[in-house]
Length: 111
Image (cartoon, rainbow, N blue to C red; front, side):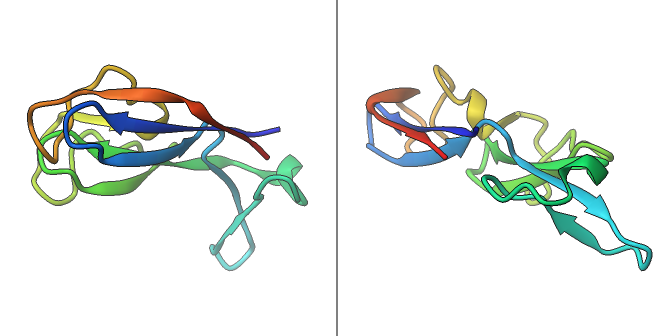
């Protein structure tokens, strides 16, 4: 079961939806990734990695980070101030540069 939250900047209201599981994947014989999306987790026993959504706190770029080759810097600006979107609570907003993200208590999702 996957859990989702919405993080909202207390200053500008920018909202980001985040899920706790990321995107687990396996690799076929040809080297192509195949995702085991929730709730249809067919192939989950073959999963070898996980792509998880991240956010650059310097420029606001959202991107995926692969657990087999984790990102240590933003692919757009090169900043090392990146965070998994699931961990945005209390982090500074890269869009207005004034507020911080907080989990919206009324927007909790389960899949």
